[in-house]
Image (tube, rainbow, N blue to C red; front, side, top):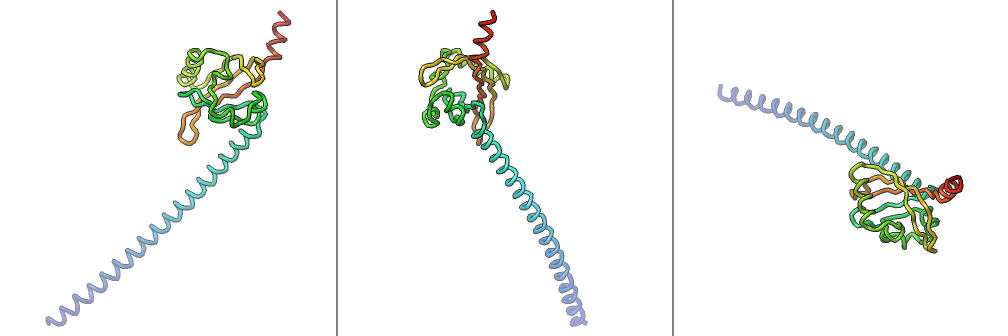
Length: 173
């Protein structure tokens, strides 16, 4: 009788072990499937992010519009697109790191107030007089918005030369 009970206990233990093993296998398969789906989703998100980054890079590099990226705390130009280099007559390397007061004729305290307005309201439009490398002064319209690039808070300034328009308006007066 003891041997029969022992054999029966061993049988049930083996059956239970097989069921637990089967349950673990099913659980592991589900986890593997979820991980694979998560990996595929992550790869899709990364591909979309890379595509967007490339689109913005092309937009920045190929735009005929003058674009400056500015560090609002230091009031320093972080980057400039080729159109900005052509307009201001400076190399990209020279524009990078340049204080905005080297281009903008406003005193630094007034320029600081304008930057604070952008940071407070999210987007602003201004009219300034900018100085080119050769000393010429140009009237510009600046559309400025805060942006985040690689976790860094910057200002994106889109600049239009309105000198001709302003000159024509003065002639009509």
